[in-house]
Amino acid sequence: MLSPGSTIGILGGGQLGRMLGLAAAQLGYKVHVYAPEAESVAAEVTAHHTQAAWDDEPRLAGFAATCDVVTYEFENVPVDTVRFLSGHVAVRPGVAGLKIAQDRLEEKTFVAGLGGRPAPFAAVPDRAALDAALAAIGTPAILKTVRMGYDGKGQARIMTPADADAAWDGIDRHVAVLEGFVTFAHEFSVILVRGIDGEIRFWDSPVNVHKDGILATSSLPPPQIVANQQAEARELMARIAAELDYVGVLTGEFFATEGGPVFNEMAPRVHNSGHWTIEGAVTSQFENHVRAVAGLPLGSTACGPLPVTMRNLIGADIAEIPALLADENCHVHHYSKTEVREGRKLGHATWVGASPV
Image 1 (tube, rainbow, N blue to C red):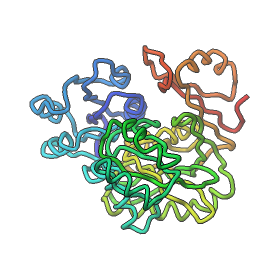
Image 2: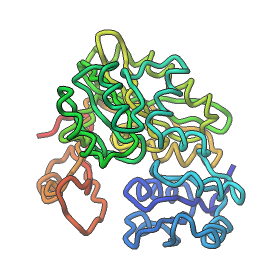
Image 3: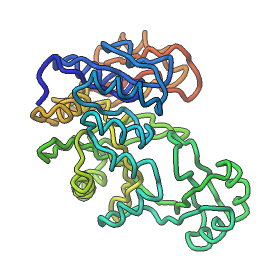
Image 4: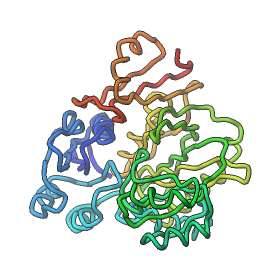
């Protein structure tokens, strides 16, 4: 158990790191952010900041020497970086979940092996394999790069086999996985926190709406079909967390279908669809992640007043903040990013106990 005044290292300098830093400060911890980028909205609210490359071992060792535990705010931190740091300081969650989440094919195979039900999928290591995958999976389908890619990036739709060449070029001919289309009623997420002692707590599952491949809103209570499938999805996520000996917040995204929950992907970190927990739950995902990695007792994940809606402020939406602040039921978070551009998450707004105006 880390005592107040201890230092938590965070790999990554984005808005998730910013909100983790604020939660850590609330519990009396100092935070040291490590990120390659010069601009770090996380570093603005933390005590220390190291700007250095992910493979700069002398700087990584120096960073580790200042930290009592290290965590990460996004899933594309290089595995080798985490492995190196693990030889110098405790890193929570560990490298196992990170490695799996960085490879879509490995992730789906892993989840299927634990009894989960991903969409039909096939490996696409090259262009010839794409034709074979299409023959096996059928169309429509989605071609996704095995590595990297988020918020709709690194993927292409294939509505008929004639689209194969364009799709392959569209992902820059990277090693990929082909997924069959899933007919679903809603998208939802399961967000859990697992402590060092193996205790697991879940927040209620929000229903998620995406626009142009980017999360637009997360809201509670969910439709009945999601509520009915929450328990099965939770059981799968608990098995995943236990298999990985996971510590911290872990998120799984699912499709609610007539046949039950279909696994989409997991994120070994705090998650955009859990931002509502800051005002909408007794303990937020950020505070509980800090509690878990610090070895503290986990906080209650119970909801406050319903309904709850979290809306991302993307691109030009950030200009709506003055109007949102005039809404007495709205809680506004500005991420302090300087560049406004289309598709960039710049903040979010949450309504608790009331619907957006």
